[in-house]
Image 1 (cartoon, one colour):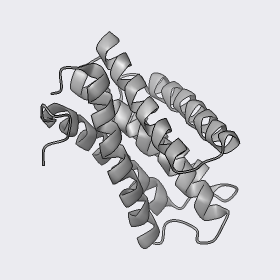
Image 2 (cartoon, helix red, strand yellow):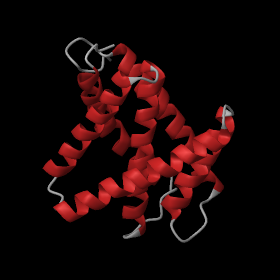
Image 3 (tube, rainbow, N blue to C red):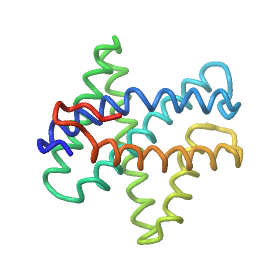
Image 4 (cartoon, rainbow, N blue to C red):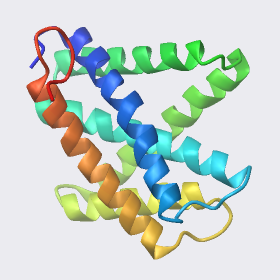
Length: 174
């Protein structure tokens, strides 16, 4: 594991920025994302929040709760926001993106707390919430809930493993 918490977060940002969009494409390829704008954009924005939350869960799983993990999470978010800015997002869109992530984190945190120590219940409710946001005004298909939940859990596990195995140069080991 990278000893410097800030570097750990930046390393995980690289992982998130590579893997998150690929998993969204998998959802699209499976026919689970409504094609056409604005439905596709909404689903992508919501997946981005859920995938980022999975990476935070991975950081916590790998490093436990503590000040170092808080620093790593902050660094992860800073690196991701920096990348978003480099992608040419205007300040208003960037602020909206950050606000959406904060709102989802608050919602997902409440879901986790309500589920207590029942990890299966928490995972299921998190998947249902994310799928509802992705589906927008229509009800999410059960396949979307199941797949989004499985991808989220796998991403959290992958993030934790990437953090644990990260090389001393700050890049995840393959």
